[in-house]
Image (tube, rainbow, N blue to C red; front, side, top):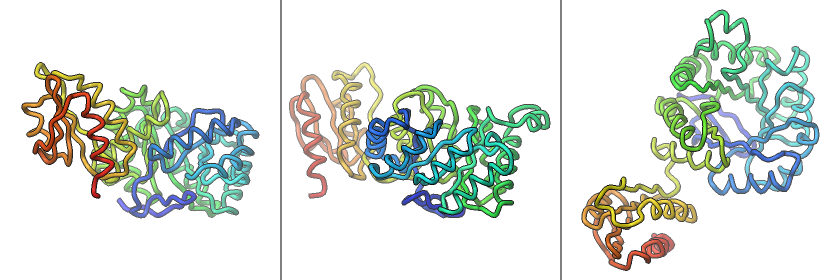
Length: 348
């Protein structure tokens, strides 16, 4: 569903632009060196926009130093203290994330809006299941998709009444069906870009699965302009999961896609270890191809025929495969390096 276009620094979201991948640092923002280093790793993994926590004035002021050393837009995450939002805007934040419900009275919200208006900085209006107002919980009998949407649009209306429409909306809940339904409803009622995610989704494994289901269903309906996979773990894992979700839906073409067969009784190599090594190694290459990792020299070539290139292993023997055809045999321990050399020379 087409939404209006919003510029977050150098990245445009909405308006039919590619879906932007976001993450959030878990360093102390005041520690500029650590934060810059983590943002660098996130950007290398494919992060388009990064958010940093701003719990103190020192953190707000650090944004200026951070911005000078990173290549992707920086979003300031603000809770409760409107003065931190103003300071973050003054120090060059590319977007301000607030929940107007916990910022304070109307004049404080207006002060934040005015600071953003002066610099044409977008505001992300964020609502989640843990921040729903008491009257909405009573009206709808708890956290429901309708309650989330009403809360978000009420807050958007407050800012619109102040004459500002440079907005992004996020409505997040940890309940996947509720989150999907809420996005279906709000997509029919607004054309603002939507930031999609499942909040408090869990650890790297459980959170990735939960997010893949929720975010995947929402995106498959044409809803959503930017995503964050929220995981309890290294933020870089959020980027890996987000990009895999986009690739699985055909919404992201760049980067190598790795497919591998499940292990079975015929597997005679360490397929789990090999597939993990390949998945890590291919991140070195900017190629839009599919790589297969197969554990059986008998069925592997046929099963890998849809991949551009593949490897398969047997007892001490390895096969290099292209489009299902065996092109080279080698010792098993040379498979990984042979694949790396093929990728390095791909297209030459």
